[in-house]
Image (tube, protein in one colour):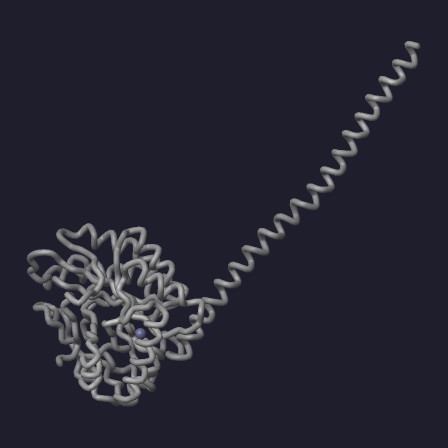
Length: 340
Ligand code: ZN
């Protein structure tokens, strides 16, 4: 009986080996199918996300092109927005800044264009630094959003626990709804920058300006539940393209209890070509000149340099003695280029 027993034992071992091999083959086949399938799913999700981001960026850029033509042709190189290509020559009129010392660093040619820019890139030039006592207040303001850059800027502000001010336009597309809400929910100030940002429409007449203002106010209220009380004129209050009397437009704002804000420090990011270093220097070198610095920056779709420069700008400002970064509130002393 011993040979039978051995035979049974060897059959059992053989059967176990067959089972093991079968499982190995099935497992290998399953793995060779599942692993590529998982990779495909992951890649498909990533592709979908990237495509969505790309579509949003493209839509953002399209929005600006519809309003400005190409950024380089339309926006001033000194950080000031201008209206139409034909009108870019001397759109930036002389700012009337309340604070002493502000005008000393600016010289203008006879046509109103700057000879020596108010954006001082020489870090060692302290000759025009205002003698400031007490706390210095810095207001970071972002125009033209929301866009695909706004989330990134909000992330940076959150990381540094800094509140800023966003002068937004009207974008009814649902992709932007959460951005308007996020600005408000995270404690930033929601300002207005016209609904359409089309100079030839909003500055056509006082009535058309009022219509645009009313449309934006209602849109922001429906979107965020708040009424904005702050306004920044596209191109600033000193723009020279408005067919309407700017003082009448200011009166429209006053009638609604709205305060307008220009700026005394420009990041110089209105044009697409500004580098991270340029924006950083424009802001950090000029903020010390003022007790109240209202800093003009942009969060439109093509302003990646602004996003990249922002952390270092915040760190540099926070390192300045007795200096705080705060959002615009009812207590903020406005910087206004035109006197009213
Ligand atoms: Zn603008």
